[in-house]
Image (cartoon, rainbow, N blue to C red; front, side, top):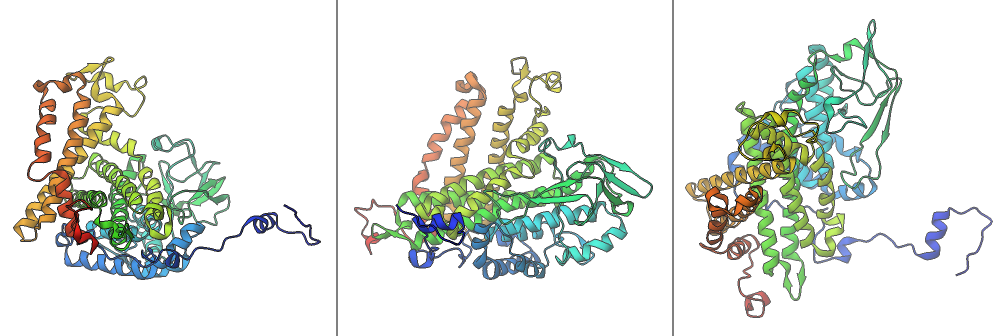
Amino acid sequence: MTFFSSTKQDDPEQSARSSYFNLPPLDVSVAFPQATPASIFPPCASDYYHFDDLLTPEEQTVRMRVRECMEKEIAPIMTEYWEKAKFPFQVIPKLGALRIAGGTIKGYGCPGLSLTGSAIATAEVARVDASCSTFILVHSSLAMLTIALCGSEAQKQKYLPSLAQLNTIACWGLTEPDYGSDASALKTAATKGLDIRELQEETKKLVEHTFIIKKDAPGLTATKIENKIGLRIVQNGDILMKNVFVADEDRLPGVDTFQDTNKILAVSRVMVAWQPIGISMGIYDMCHRYLKERKQFGAPLAAFQINQQKLVQMLGNVQAMILVGWRLCKLYEHGKMTPGRASLAKSWITLKSRETAAMGRELLGGNGILADFLVAKAFCDLEPIYTYEGTYEINTLVTGREVTGIASFKPAALNKRSRLYLKERKQFGAPLAAFQINQQKLVQMLGNVQAMILVGWRLCKLYEYGKMTPGRASLAKSWITLKSRETAAMGRELLGGNGILADFLVAKAFCDLEPIYTYEGTYEINTLVTGREVTGIASFKPAALNKRSRL
């Protein structure tokens, strides 16, 4: 290959590109005419258990207002901005007009939504775009709520009205480079002056006091974190503060210790649990439409049993996640939410959301790696959500500590507290409950049990209200028995050698589940009953015998 020099200095990348190949961007609607891209967002098909019936009229209104805006105004442009890793600042006024910023805060121009209403709004935004949801969550449920719960009256009057309209945007900082999950060990120092506070060459702004810092404060620099695989639209910043002076009027008087952050995180943990719920709803809605539109071997993808089985398992996950999120809201509203319960919801929901996204990605085949069809984008966006507001592992340990009475955060060699507890079964000189891997399994089992209870309860209510259908009953039976099998298998593992002795119940229950998994319709048949109901296509007979699929 010969390269010709030019008297004009060419851009090296441009020269190389033109010398080899320079493909124009793909028009997805032309390349894949069988399937509609996410820019034309699919209608909601994921509320199979009539969750809307559990909402107040006000909450339903918020849901539909946010859904309409996100589907019509936001969905058409988000793939392009996600690809570029840029934020579409032109959507901020549209999001502000929804009146969801400020969430549950009353007064000061804030909407004063119920916790459930605010959670529903979070989910509806996330259903279309997780980055927009994170933008609103951080601004509203972290920054604004910190001022509302910990700020002075003057600070509330000064900042909240503008923040509620999204005329002013806020961020929130908690971690340092050396302290992520171990946030209580932050080293940022503040020195009190005569009328100022001085932050010395450290990063982030939350210590045993909380400060409001303007972006143009001398000594403050923020750089954009790039090369992210998820939430690419969100402009995450690495904040460095060197000799930053903060007026005393910008210290929040309601914060005296690190534990005061729990007031804020209690609400944000609820909201962050609803993000993966919304994302999973969007994934299911997209897959539901795609499988009915896209054809292979002369039939819609929805006509194939293996695809219906995955779609129905995704649908079961979504119904369970919604109900777990709803129950968490009710626990908070009735003063019964604990750190362990919030952490259980966040860890279990993000785990099931990841599972749902993986199945959705598989269902879309090659189009499952294109952001144009939403699922690939959502698949990546879930990863930071799985990690932030407490990693999956940390959240399981928070719940594990609450249900066992044993903290296992520190490595075993450092954890003196675990040695003080006397439990029945010990190995290596400590109760089995003191080992992180066992707590993780125990908490995952607990999450499964809570979700199964809620799905069973919802099925009873659907029956009582005359809304139960064969597909809904089959979904409950197939999904609950699948999760019960999973729970029994983990329980058998936890008991080690005793896990094969009927004397300790688990082995007996493990075996007793097998006929239940099969009778009243096998798992496979029940998924096909639900699959027929949600797709309108029956796939009971093998393809070679199924004349209907050819029509």
